[in-house]
Length: 591
Image (cartoon, rainbow, N blue to C red; front, side, top):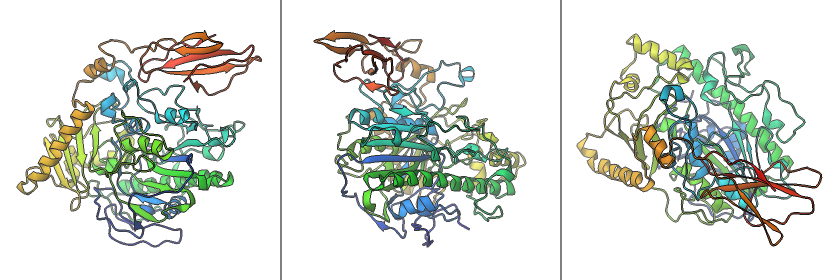
């Protein structure tokens, strides 16, 4: 039995498990574990290493390398034993799409209009048009920047960035996307997204599980999946059909913000069972990497897209919604079995990715590299997060956190924390909370989420209050810390241009420069100069993708990124399209 709270106990398992602290609550730099502490690493590797991202959903630190041995995860435990465990990674939001925007752009979601969850849906509820985030003109998806540096970039298969990815963003983004589709010896950046741990895996009928393990077949275009779809709701299984990785009568220590009832314990069982399913898919990818002889020239990242899936975790910016595991395995097991406790934010991923391949991160990125040639000389002192609209319900909350304290500012104190998000209410634990609330059977800690009003400011000492239940904002002993974090939040908001609680209608007008319809990227102009094709676009910051059609009418699948005039062969033709992130794409033109 492993409690869902920080623990100070060493674990020893036969499958290279790395001990440590579970991070459902706030974390501190005083964590202990069996792994050796590590400062910023000096790494020995090729100038153009491959990079593999293994990304799971709705994932708190419920795994052995982070101190929770409830479920055995042989593949993740091996990855941790051969790599570095990063204990203090935080998402920029408690939900996926805004956080994925931060990851792919290296920018805070609220600085580019990516902070509201589901900007292309719930339009009947909000009365707003569909729209996407609009980064500054020079901003690019980090995958596009890697492509410009010669990398093959594949994404399998979820995107969800709060904008439609341009065709220049990936060499391939599909259920078939895989490094195996690249040119021979081309360095790659490959992303694999695992959906088994998503909150929908807690729904009834019993759990979400992809009946076909797609990653075993990735890259094989002859393989045909059954029961495959992009919707989490499509693949439901009866309880008796679900593979069992953990006894159903396992005893769990339930976090204090949830009631200890049979339904909640069963959801805890589902959570861990889904993690075991995900671990098997991680193992499939690692096996492919080893089969291809690429393990020791590849930097492997494993992380979640935000914190846990349970009520009062996902969508909130307590650490239970922000803190997610990060494991990085470096070539030849460099720094194997060590732990790094520095604060990291999702906005740091894009600059770090560029730094690892020796490319200087562009100035518009708001994160800082924590590895590679351009790693920051100073460790991050604070992480920041935001919560705004979720589906049809809007709030406005900002948070800043250092290594010990969390400060939260509520811009709508007259509004309660709990939002009746219909999607979340499919979780049996959520239904149980509402039933017990209405029956008057929740205790003080469990009722906090259902308060009718919020304090304007909250301050938590995460060392002694890991679940963020004891607000210290009015305690005179903590006024100096309160002022420090309040000042830091003001600085951050000003620096990134965030206006919390800005009506979404005004946000859209700001993104669209006062227009009432989504801007359209201008069509590319094709000119022939000195025997070469030159392409331009009048939309500032637009990327231009092109394909060359050979004399037999064949053309490649990926869109190449236009950078300089192109020489066409005899009887060859060219088509191109321009795309500015957040704008509608141009029409396709050819010559």
